[in-house]
Image (cartoon, rainbow, N blue to C red):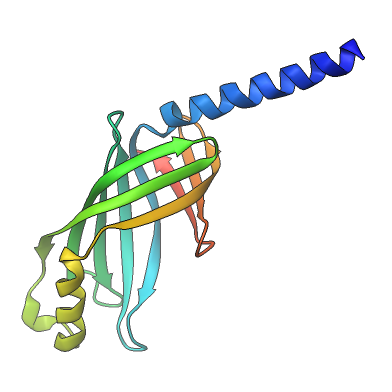
Length: 157
């Protein structure tokens, strides 16, 4: 019986230590795998993503949107500013502000109405995202969005 109690204590204690270490492992700058965002069947963007999780709870995500097939000619860059926290294996991110940082020649954009709608959304309202921390160490961060099941793989920058 004492052995079972000891095993349970060790498991609970080690789980709490691992959960407490996750925020420290998350701090820093990360470069994540690019993803595609399909706006219409003819307008597909490849999005390069980097995220910085600061120890004070601030998060800065930079997205470079490039039109597939025209990556060097048609693009724009957004900074998404917000907060983050980690509780156990759950990462919660709150988007507070989106900023258009730079844009290529606006006239080259393929579907101006679609692009205007995308650019208009830059000043959208607060959004919250929750993800499961699948892997978190000093060199790799993998999360899975709870609503969309989208997996994001990142490496320390």
